[in-house]
Structures are given as structure tokens and as C-alpha cells.
Image (tube, rainbow, N blue to C red):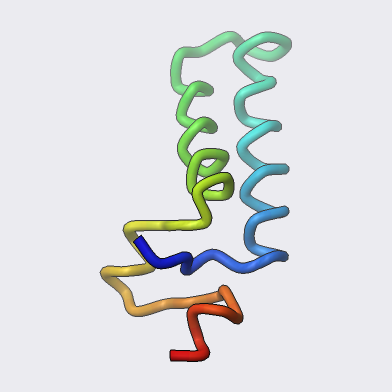
Length: 65
């Protein structure tokens, strides 16, 4: 797996994911809030399978091919 998620993209994914997961504990407590784990995982692993399918790369290292 080659990284395809860049810096700003990672920060936004972590922030949005953390916010959505926090809704599980402090918001309406819906199990759907656990879907926030997905953007957090893609940010931590720096790899997004959807980006691979769409041919998108926001990581500067991945562009240097």
C-alpha cells in the first residue's frame, strides 16, 4: 500500500472522524457515529481505498512516481 493521503487531508480526516465518534459519547448516541472510525483509520494509515479507485493522490510523496 503506497500512501495516497496527504497532510491537510489527514488533518481534516482526523478532525471529522474524531467529531463524528464523539457524537457517539456526547451526542445522540447512535451506532452510526462509529462510522467516524473509517476516516480516522484512513488518516492514520495514510491510505484510502476510494482514492485508489478514483486515481486521486493528495500525498506529495506518492506524486513523485
